Length: 212
Ligand code: HEC
Ligand code: HEC
Image 1 (cartoon, rainbow, N blue to C red):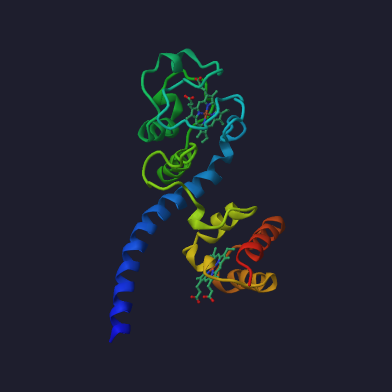
Image 2: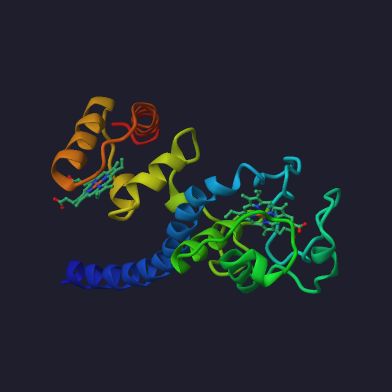
């Protein structure tokens, strides 16, 4: 009897917890996708704290910053005269069609046509602050709670595509069993074959932090 009550209690606590987790996880998933999409921007922009301007200004901390206000970058007149800040909404409009949103600006980029991709890029930009996402999830982006270490981003972006990262975190396996698990993901569960270097990073990470 006591056992049954405590199980019910545990389940109800757990379902509240999972609800919270999944809103944060959705935002984190979106940001992880955005992180891959911004490869197309990286010829012109840096994203990490302390990195210099390139052809375009650094995008660290860009969300909610006044348009054209990053110190040390020579902006176009169009940018200097534009009044407003980079709210998530403004960013989405700008990235849809830079030349339409701020005519005569100097960003030689035609835009991101798919709305889902724009949302993902902006979710990623929102993570680029010292204290985590500026809007949305209240906790900072933590890669689904994976332990910090080399390979964590790879594991997050590859393994959260089909299922919760929880499924990965709750395991403790040797390197060879993790390798088998990845083979099984590819052969039976439809995961794309990974590039050799990424496969190594992922197996190294899993064996080190989720070893058994
Ligand atoms: C060919 C180079 C180039 C590419 C590619 C490019 N940008 Fe830019 N970006 C610029 C330049 C140059 C500016 C400054 C524009 C101005 O001064 O008129 C800029 C400005 C910006 C700003 C405003 C920053 C501020 O400080 O006000 C944002 C946000 C931005 N880019 C995001 C992106 C994103 C996201 C991508 C990829 C999806 C991207 N850019 C791709 C060159 C580029
Ligand atoms: C293409 C989709 C897909 C991707 C990508 C994927 N998985 Fe899975 N994974 C599945 C499915 C489907 C199951 C559930 C299989 C079942 O219930 O029998 C699963 C189950 C698992 C399980 C639980 C196995 C068990 O015995 O209960 C682990 C651990 C796991 N995946 C690890 C990973 C890791 C690590 C990665 C990243 C390297 C990954 N998965 C990427 C589809 C995927």
